[in-house]
Image (tube, rainbow, N blue to C red):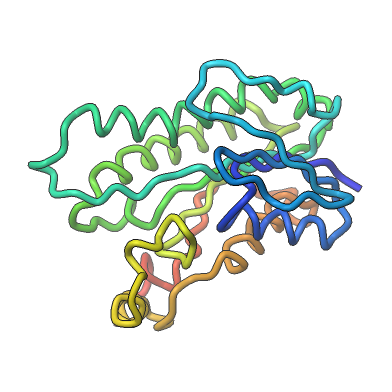
Amino acid sequence: MKHFLIIGGSSGIGAAVCKQLNDSSHRVIATYNKNQGSSSENITFHPMDVTSSQYDLSFLPDALDGLVYCPGAINLKPFARIHPDDFLKDYQLQVLGAIRVIQQVLPHLKKSGNASIVLFSTVAVQTGFNFHSIVSSSKGAIEGLTRSLAAELSPYIRINAIAPSITETPLASGLLNTPEKKEANAQRHPLKKIGTPDDIASMVCFLLNDQSSWITGQILHIDGGMSAVRG
């Protein structure tokens, strides 16, 4: 049994990761911001505001085998209507939040001797889309952070990032709230469907386990072919 910390594990992709790890009999410590998930024998939930400068992490075990940082936002606006503070607010959540968590749990990860960190980017970093300047800026920083930390923390801690396309989660609900929107978004992808939380969670769990022990510093595109295939 391994011990994993899932930041933002109460809904969407985070919840799917918790379930898949639990199904594999691992011990999961998850955090939530507003809505607490369902605890079980192997999953416990703890409140955490990732935009705070300090966290109470006294609930963590001495050694952690993996960390997944799930909090995110999708703020789509025309560039001319964006205030610079909008970029700062997004960066605070998506980048500084991840940095603070990694720094504070690093001693626990080092004690594992073979730990894995998984972060999240977006297909929009490498493939330009209208109105995505806020999220692309923050997630572009995550990709740079991933590669830099992969060099600095190896060989005892691996770090990779997943870059999904639109996935059917509460975070994307405003973009998928009608059958017409779902179909239009599905048709934009070569595989003609929208991703599910389990699609992404399966890759997260692979990156956390020993089968991926020779993978670090990678940005993995789980995006229905959006970034690589042109119809």
